[in-house]
Amino acid sequence: MSDDLVDLYQDIILDHNRRPRNSRKIHTATHQSEGINPLCGDEVTIYLDLLDERITDISFQGQGCAISQASASLMTEMLKGLDLDETRQHSKILHDLLNSEEDAQDALLKYGNLAALSGVRKFPARVKCATLAWHALEAALRGKDSISTEEEL
Ligand code: FES
Image (cartoon, rainbow, N blue to C red; front, top):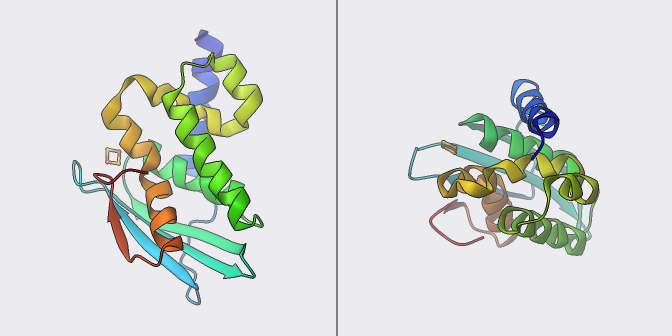
Protein backbone atom coordinates (compact mmCIF):
# COMPACT_ATOMS: atom_id res chain seq x y z
CA MET A 1 0.00 0.00 0.00
CA SER A 2 1.41 3.41 -0.94
CA ASP A 3 2.21 5.95 1.77
CA ASP A 4 -0.41 8.30 0.29
CA LEU A 5 -3.09 5.67 0.62
CA VAL A 6 -2.05 4.81 4.18
CA ASP A 7 -2.33 8.53 5.03
CA LEU A 8 -5.74 8.79 3.37
CA TYR A 9 -7.08 5.74 5.23
CA GLN A 10 -5.73 7.09 8.52
CA ASP A 11 -7.34 10.47 7.83
CA ILE A 12 -10.74 8.86 7.15
CA ILE A 13 -10.59 6.82 10.35
CA LEU A 14 -9.40 9.76 12.46
CA ASP A 15 -12.07 12.04 10.99
CA HIS A 16 -14.87 9.57 11.76
CA ASN A 17 -13.45 8.97 15.24
CA ARG A 18 -13.19 12.68 16.03
CA ARG A 19 -16.48 13.69 14.40
CA PRO A 20 -18.60 10.53 14.50
CA ARG A 21 -21.66 10.64 12.25
CA ASN A 22 -25.03 9.63 13.74
CA SER A 23 -23.63 9.32 17.27
CA ARG A 24 -26.80 9.59 19.34
CA LYS A 25 -29.50 7.44 20.85
CA ILE A 26 -32.76 6.90 18.94
CA HIS A 27 -35.23 6.82 21.82
CA THR A 28 -38.00 5.31 19.67
CA ALA A 29 -35.76 2.75 17.93
CA THR A 30 -37.59 -0.32 16.66
CA HIS A 31 -34.38 -2.38 17.02
CA GLN A 32 -31.25 -2.01 19.09
CA SER A 33 -28.35 -4.14 20.23
CA GLU A 34 -25.08 -3.77 22.08
CA GLY A 35 -21.89 -5.22 20.61
CA ILE A 36 -19.15 -6.05 23.09
CA ASN A 37 -15.52 -6.89 22.41
CA PRO A 38 -14.58 -9.07 25.40
CA LEU A 39 -10.87 -8.72 24.65
CA CYS A 40 -10.87 -5.03 25.58
CA GLY A 41 -14.33 -4.33 27.03
CA ASP A 42 -15.20 -1.81 24.32
CA GLU A 43 -18.82 -1.58 23.32
CA VAL A 44 -21.04 -0.06 20.63
CA THR A 45 -24.82 0.08 20.77
CA ILE A 46 -26.65 0.32 17.45
CA TYR A 47 -30.12 1.87 17.19
CA LEU A 48 -32.33 1.30 14.17
CA ASP A 49 -35.68 2.49 12.97
CA LEU A 50 -37.01 -0.03 10.52
CA LEU A 51 -40.11 0.67 8.44
CA ASP A 52 -41.31 -1.73 5.74
CA GLU A 53 -37.90 -3.49 5.79
CA ARG A 54 -36.05 -0.21 5.19
CA ILE A 55 -33.68 1.55 7.61
CA THR A 56 -35.25 4.97 8.01
CA ASP A 57 -32.83 5.97 10.77
CA ILE A 58 -29.70 4.48 12.29
CA SER A 59 -27.33 5.67 14.98
CA PHE A 60 -24.82 4.44 17.53
CA GLN A 61 -23.35 5.19 20.91
CA GLY A 62 -20.31 3.62 22.44
CA GLN A 63 -16.81 3.83 23.66
CA GLY A 64 -13.75 2.22 22.26
CA CYS A 65 -10.77 2.47 20.00
CA ALA A 66 -10.66 4.73 16.94
CA ILE A 67 -11.28 1.83 14.56
CA SER A 68 -14.40 0.58 16.34
CA GLN A 69 -15.91 4.06 16.54
CA ALA A 70 -14.96 5.00 12.97
CA SER A 71 -16.38 1.73 11.67
CA ALA A 72 -19.69 2.41 13.46
CA SER A 73 -19.77 5.94 12.07
CA LEU A 74 -19.00 4.80 8.50
CA MET A 75 -21.62 2.05 8.83
CA THR A 76 -24.43 4.36 9.93
CA GLU A 77 -23.59 6.85 7.19
CA MET A 78 -23.69 4.09 4.61
CA LEU A 79 -26.82 2.17 5.66
CA LYS A 80 -29.33 4.96 6.31
CA GLY A 81 -32.15 4.63 3.79
CA LEU A 82 -31.20 1.14 2.59
CA ASP A 83 -33.49 -1.88 2.65
CA LEU A 84 -32.60 -5.14 4.40
CA ASP A 85 -31.23 -6.84 1.28
CA GLU A 86 -28.93 -3.90 0.60
CA THR A 87 -27.91 -3.87 4.27
CA ARG A 88 -26.95 -7.56 4.14
CA GLN A 89 -24.97 -6.90 0.96
CA HIS A 90 -23.01 -4.20 2.79
CA SER A 91 -22.27 -6.60 5.68
CA LYS A 92 -20.91 -9.03 3.10
CA ILE A 93 -18.86 -6.26 1.49
CA LEU A 94 -17.23 -5.51 4.85
CA HIS A 95 -16.55 -9.22 5.42
CA ASP A 96 -15.00 -9.53 1.95
CA LEU A 97 -12.98 -6.37 2.44
CA LEU A 98 -11.47 -7.61 5.70
CA ASN A 99 -10.75 -11.07 4.35
CA SER A 100 -9.48 -10.38 0.84
CA GLU A 101 -6.00 -9.74 -0.44
CA GLU A 102 -7.36 -7.12 -2.79
CA ASP A 103 -5.04 -4.28 -3.68
CA ALA A 104 -5.74 -1.24 -1.48
CA GLN A 105 -6.14 1.06 -4.48
CA ASP A 106 -8.75 -1.27 -6.02
CA ALA A 107 -10.51 -1.52 -2.66
CA LEU A 108 -10.82 2.25 -2.48
CA LEU A 109 -12.47 2.37 -5.91
CA LYS A 110 -14.77 -0.53 -5.09
CA TYR A 111 -15.73 0.17 -1.48
CA GLY A 112 -15.22 3.93 -1.09
CA ASN A 113 -14.46 5.19 2.41
CA LEU A 114 -15.21 1.76 3.88
CA ALA A 115 -11.89 0.67 2.33
CA ALA A 116 -10.17 2.70 5.06
CA LEU A 117 -10.84 -0.28 7.34
CA SER A 118 -8.86 -2.63 5.08
CA GLY A 119 -5.64 -1.69 6.89
CA VAL A 120 -6.64 -3.98 9.78
CA ARG A 121 -6.52 -7.13 7.62
CA LYS A 122 -3.07 -8.02 8.88
CA PHE A 123 -4.04 -7.69 12.54
CA PRO A 124 -6.67 -10.26 13.62
CA ALA A 125 -7.35 -8.51 16.92
CA ARG A 126 -8.08 -5.27 15.08
CA VAL A 127 -10.47 -7.02 12.69
CA LYS A 128 -12.72 -7.49 15.72
CA CYS A 129 -12.59 -3.72 16.30
CA ALA A 130 -13.73 -3.09 12.73
CA THR A 131 -16.57 -5.63 12.93
CA LEU A 132 -17.92 -4.68 16.39
CA ALA A 133 -20.66 -2.34 15.14
CA TRP A 134 -21.56 -4.73 12.32
CA HIS A 135 -22.00 -7.59 14.83
CA ALA A 136 -24.33 -5.34 16.80
CA LEU A 137 -26.27 -4.47 13.64
CA GLU A 138 -26.77 -8.15 12.77
CA ALA A 139 -27.85 -8.87 16.35
CA ALA A 140 -30.31 -5.97 16.34
CA LEU A 141 -31.87 -7.25 13.11
CA ARG A 142 -32.21 -10.69 14.70
CA GLY A 143 -33.89 -9.17 17.77
CA LYS A 144 -30.95 -9.94 20.07
CA ASP A 145 -30.15 -7.38 22.80
CA SER A 146 -26.41 -7.92 22.81
CA ILE A 147 -23.65 -9.83 21.09
CA SER A 148 -19.96 -10.49 21.60
CA THR A 149 -17.30 -10.35 18.88
CA GLU A 150 -16.41 -13.91 19.91
CA GLU A 151 -19.37 -14.87 17.73
CA GLU A 152 -18.96 -14.93 13.96
CA LEU A 153 -20.27 -12.11 11.77
FE1 FES B 1 -11.50 -2.52 21.76
FE2 FES B 1 -10.78 -1.97 19.33
S1 FES B 1 -9.47 -2.16 21.05
S2 FES B 1 -12.74 -2.55 20.00
